[in-house]
Figure 1 (cartoon, rainbow, N blue to C red):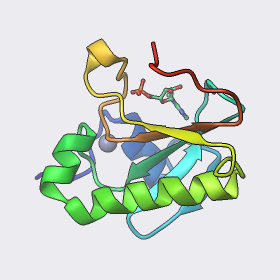
Figure 2 (tube, rainbow, N blue to C red):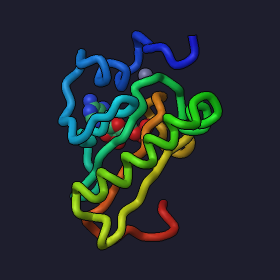
Figure 3 (cartoon, rainbow, N blue to C red):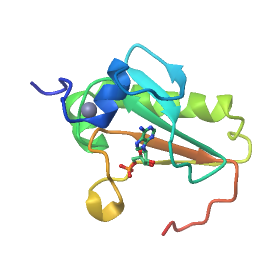
Figure 4 (cartoon, helix red, strand yellow):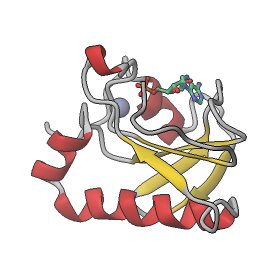
Length: 119
Ligand code: AMP
Ligand code: ZN
C-alpha cells in the first residue's frame, strides 16, 4: 500500500530503528538525522516516516506530511543556528539529479557559503 514501509529501503530502516542514525529531531510524522557523508558543516536529512520515493509523490499523496517535512527543515535550521546566515533545503529528485535513496528526504545544508546555481 502507498506509504507502507519497504523492506529494501534504508530510510524506512532508520525510521524503524533497525539502522542507527544520529537523530536530531523527531515528530509524529517525520525524523531528522545527520547525513553520514556531510557536504557542509551542518547537513541534516528530514524524512517522512511514511515511504514515498520522492518529494513530489509524497506531496501528491500526503500534502500535510510534505508540509511537516518543510516545517521541520526550518526547525532544524534554527536548532543548528544556520537560519541567520542562510541555509539550503534540497530535494534531489531522480538519479540524474543525484538521488541515491528513493525515500523522500530534504537535505538541510548550512554553516558555509553556498554557491548559486548549485552544480
Ligand atoms: P540523495 O543522494 O539525495 O538521495 O541523498 C541521500 C543521502 O543519504 C546522502 O547524502 C547520503 O550521504 C545519506 N546517507 C546514506 N546512508 C546514510 C545513513 N545510514 N545515515 C545517514 N545518512 C545516510
Ligand atoms: Zn522508505
